Amino acid sequence: MEVEQQQPSYTSNFIIHLNENEDNGISYRSRKSSPKLVKHYILGEVLGEGAYGKVKDGMDSFTQKRVAVKILKRARLKKIPGGEASVLKEINITKKLHNKHIIKLIDHFIIEEKGKLYIVYEYVGGGTLQNILENAPNGRLPPHQSQFIFRQLIEACEYIHSQKILHRDIKPDNILFTHANVLKLSDFGVAEDSSQLEDFECLSRSYGSPAFQPPELTQFQTTFSPFKIDIWAMGVTLYLMTIGKFPFSGANMFVLFENISKCKIEFPNDLDKDLVNLIKGILQVDHIQRFSLGQIKNHPWCIKYIPETEPFVPLLEESKFLPLEMAYGDDEGDDGGGGRGGDDELIFGYENDANTIDLQDPEYIPSISVGDQPPSTPTLHHQQQSQQFHGNGNNVLYDPRNNEHLINGLPVHPIELDPVNIKKSSIGTNISDVALIRENYICSDNDASSGQDDEEYSDDNEISGEDLNPTNHRGDRVKGNKKSLGGKRKNNSDSSKIEFNPNRSSPQPPLRNSSNRRPKITFESPHNKSKCIIN
Ligand SMILES: Nc1ncnc2c1ncn2[C@@H]1O[C@H](COP(=O)(O)OP(=O)(O)OP(=O)(O)O)[C@@H](O)[C@H]1O
Image 1: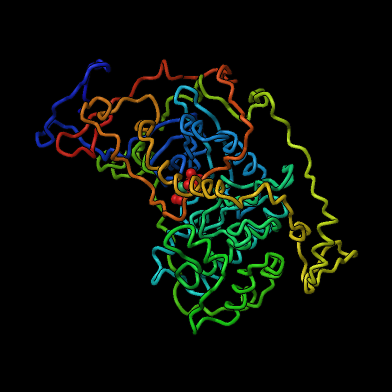
Image 2: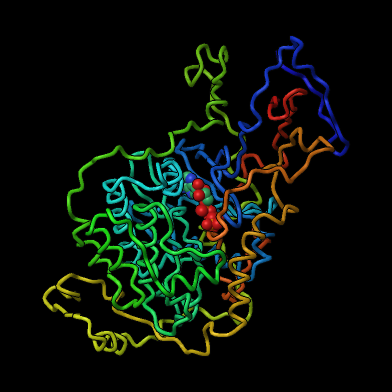
């Protein structure tokens, strides 16, 4: 039976009393299945939540390809100095990376009227390494599975470093897997493009997750090798994956940083000696002695055959894209057998929104506030730095025939040979830096959990039962399980303020926009508030 409802007055509280037990022909669906449309993407369930927004399951309605849509609130970003600029940086960095082990950025746009910025990524459904570790017996993976994953991580890092990109937040939460077991490095939220850096001072601050920070950052050293920061984090990830706990811990961040600086690592007695040697080579306090990616890649533990003694810890199960199931009618009787077998035509509202800004449109020019300078070329004297590196007693050779540097006979990317020197006065050695760290690591989680004032409930202009219900509480929303030591903050030091131009309209005329689109009305079940009907 079709439920005919008059258009309610949305300004008044409006509750419809329906009895689910009566045979009124109304079928209720789970509320979470409610599809939403932004640009031409259908949004589904929340896949995960980060410090600044959530990531939703999605589908491109043109190609029917599954996507993951990161939704960021501009109001929340504006509260962070350089917040939007750092998201633009994340977009620009991810956009320039093309490798099977790097998450692919598909689209990005702003919807002015919603005050939200959307970043569309390829969907990677097997879960994160963190998810896999949580399902693993004793929190660790079988050696052959660890090796399989670690080799892919090496490839991912080799690629980004070859593009002069520093990830700066390598950790199990940011390592995703496809169902074909392909590793994808994600979340370039604090990454830096070293080719765009004027100086390297910003790298001396630890913006990544504390437990994965190297000693040169926890000790505020003035000389460090930028790419060795990622290599250290790979070592912590390898330890965690193979041993099932962090190599360094502490009741608070100061103790943790002290333990990282001391670098006392314990290994189980029965651990593979090659693995112990590899981890020790990576987790070296001296960043110059620390293994390069070439040394890691050719290390005996990485190249040897490890027999499959235990089964792989499984990935997350493949899930269906719920809105699509619903659109085709997967309920019994809807299409004579469920699933996509019926004659239903899939119709989605509108293609473009008048208020959508396509950030890829060449006509879109962000206004840059006065005083900002375009990035200039790096000022490092590479040759001088390399000499210093050579002078440190390392066995670095240059092979002119292949135009490559070798450490202990193994090729190393030239970028790894360049330690960076920064002025002592410009980095954290005083009390104000303690405040900075506190702000970076202690407030970030609070930020994530607070700010419910701008917590979203509805992704577009649809009107739901919740909106009509005066007793609706906004605080009940599912939050990501952020670890207390895993939180982080975007680059607050970036003083450049890139403002999006609010006066710019969409380059394409909308087929249906928010004003002529029929509002969707949702009524909740009188007995089960998690169920609703969609008219
Ligand atoms: N492409 C994707 N496909 C499937 N799930 C994803 C994808 N990207 C992210 N997720 C899920 O969303 C979660 C949060 O994503 P992400 O870490 O990118 O958000 P964030 O805001 O950058 O987090 P952070 O607090 O680390 O900055 C991930 O842990 C993962 O579960």
